Length: 326
Ligand code: PBG
Image (cartoon, rainbow, N blue to C red):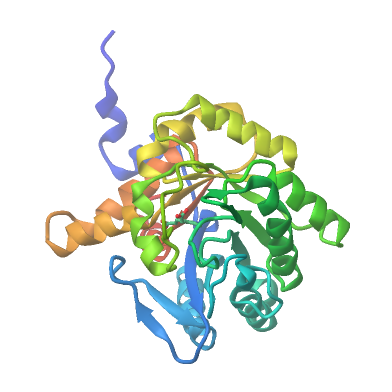
């Protein structure tokens, strides 16, 4: 028997019948960088087209995304001052807390706010937790993460997303939220986060590069796939509701693996370096920008992701609206 694959590829309607994976604008999440001040829209060098915004200019951005059909946002904050204990991360008037209050007052449940929960943007040393000597101290860091979660939930964030990679943090965050009247707030954990060079442009965007060493002692080794299952299972056992895998493109095998292993929503994070590669190659005229953005998004969902965090969320939404992808 010969497989006549071409029979179902002859035209667009036939191809629709054959399509195995689909997604929608509902599945897209757009990351935003926020800092204090007024009238700020500061370009991010290695991420052309992306900016750091002051809170007063956020409505312009949010409404542009909403118009395209993107209503879910991942918030990153850059504090005014950094210190050893990352106090800006859990301050009541911290940048994320202030932004969330302002956005919730204006848009209510029209938008979903997911707060990145980490310390690296807030610590003077740029690491994702509290130090003991030159090491990030897991046990010392946990109560701070719980404090950050509580302050973000209290400010109106709809979901908290711990990205620090400390062991047992989902458990302590869940307990803190439950004990403080926030049982209903989901945890979207960066369960599977690799120590990746693809975060380079983000560290410029969020001013969060480690001042010494690297993050290999807490983020995962890119050689490992089975370990991702362990990380995912332990976060689920501790109470995570949604799992993030990041980066996306180089780790779609991991997405595939987890899709077969767990039954909660899986979210791919197409990170800053992935964005930068597409934009740089497009600026040189080496690739077709739109089509590359579309194919990357399709690949994430085909691999098994249910959700996608992408700096190209608006472009992906536009492609869905135009019927170029589905
Ligand atoms: C915070 C955090 C990082 C990213 C998301 N949350 C940076 C890091 O771990 O160094 C990277 C996102 C991106 O590259 O787009 N810890």
